[in-house]
Length: 220
Image (spheres, rainbow, N blue to C red):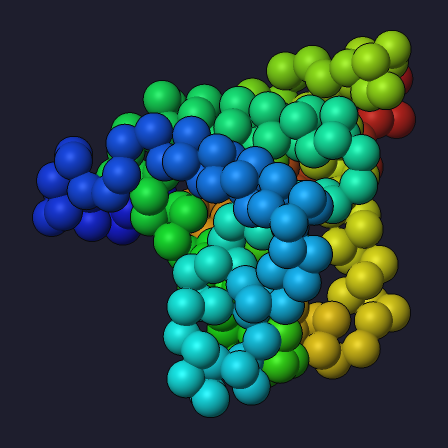
């Protein structure tokens, strides 16, 4: 994350919108109420369609960010909004407003780039990337799955990474493009540290294997 810290020093500690996630989740709730009770077709006006953007509907480059995570049961909506707020707010407290804003903007740019290539963008992967960052920083944090089963963040993240891998391996080129661009923010922030850790673990594994090969059968 060295380049991110350098960028933070250039932008200052106050770049971005403090408490961004309270505005995002509140607007999601407002959009849900508007769409569910008064204007069911609102998703068609706010979603990220690249063809519509080229026709002048540039507001979609922003409004897709506040589409609710679900249009179903309102209880599920409140749970999803709470989790989204908690993840984002925790990351902002950990990094500060500037770094969190950069992470969020990179995710939004990734979604837009995916829309340019595939014709349609979604905020799903952007908000999933908040969880991936949270799980990377707090791997032992516990979530209650179905309100009953305690499960650590690192195992939920591993499950999501497995889904990413399967979708990339067996999906279409469109799916692959969406996955790659959706992870821009995560790898921009954690990629160097992650790859360094993998390399160090692999080197340690090679050393242990060589040790066992050369000395494992030594009688003394």
